[in-house]
Length: 479
Image 1 (cartoon, helix red, strand yellow):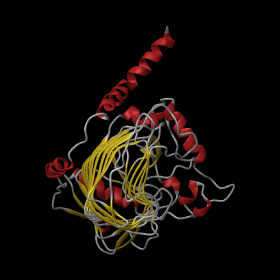
Image 2 (cartoon, rainbow, N blue to C red):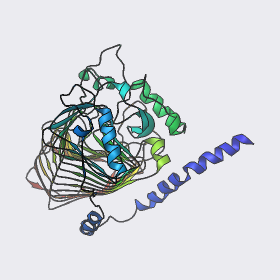
Image 3 (tube, helix red, strand yellow):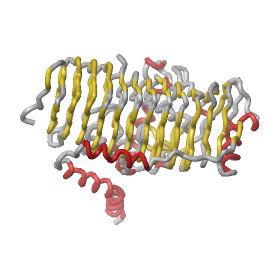
Image 4 (cartoon, one colour):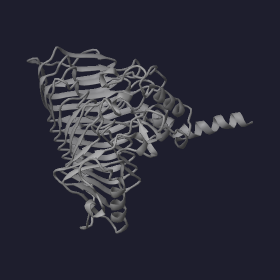
């Protein structure tokens, strides 16, 4: 009798996700949303996102014995200052001008880690100094090396100032673990492939996160800055360079502000900002120059995403600049729990090394429903591949086919100007029986592009007062 009972128990564990997916299917047949009404809701969403507030009390790390110079380890100093600050009700942990070497920094409630101009934190590249914590790797939860800056289940936290956070990622440390020659990997050196496959297998089998233990002896790189299950978060003003892996990763968090940050990090998988399972995330006035997607909105990978079943929603991107990267604003590919209500406006995207402006990626192993993406007033100087790219056959790490069909609907790009769109204005590939629905280009001008659009399994693509290569576009017939 035990075996049937086990099967029933597993089904119950996944029931909420399957119901969510089933409920999403009828929505695909409904009429599209109204973009004007959607934009009218934005002020009320922004009004709910409050900056954290801190006591006017400062804890200078020099008073706790910090030694500048970039050689002496200051890990215990940061720990003592942060614990004293939070114990006394919070305030500012001040990092004065100078270079400070440290291991991971763990934030606590009501603490603002503030780097003055001229301050630089150099993170140790020795994996042994990073404890094992509950974290995530490419959309799958696990126990792994601590992120360089980590806040777990905290409230009212911030990293601010005009200083620099230097992950010191390089081909000599961290980056080569990706297993690619371009990042210094050579045959016989450690690489992540075996560990990635092992982690995926553990997640597919439903092994509890606490038993997915990696870290020492394994080669899954840590995230740079991770806010895990946090509320009221601010990351403001700092420069972030040379991250080991994903740069900014709010996961299962809400009311997050990323404001005026500069990211220059060209390592492998160096996404600039990856909100995952998160709600009410406001990314503004930020510069992205990255080795992967500039912004990549996530919601878990494969069975792990369906297990968690928390979609990312109300993600706002305003007044940002995107230079090098795989995509300016990307949704996916770890997208299994879905994404709703993404707003992008007043951004500039321009680089010969920027592949796409707006990008959505998934496949039938990851699934997920992406809906209601609103883009307006963007300026694209140059991209390589496409202005809008939607690839629902996206594949990495071997077999990426399954029975969880990805669905995309209501993608609006309006009042935008593109000088050089690369190969395609729109490159969109859906699945038979699960078409991509409701793409709108309204008041868009693409001055130069090789092909207007290339679509497969797309329903209800419309051009409204849109010009491509000097011609007024007509909506395709027989969709």
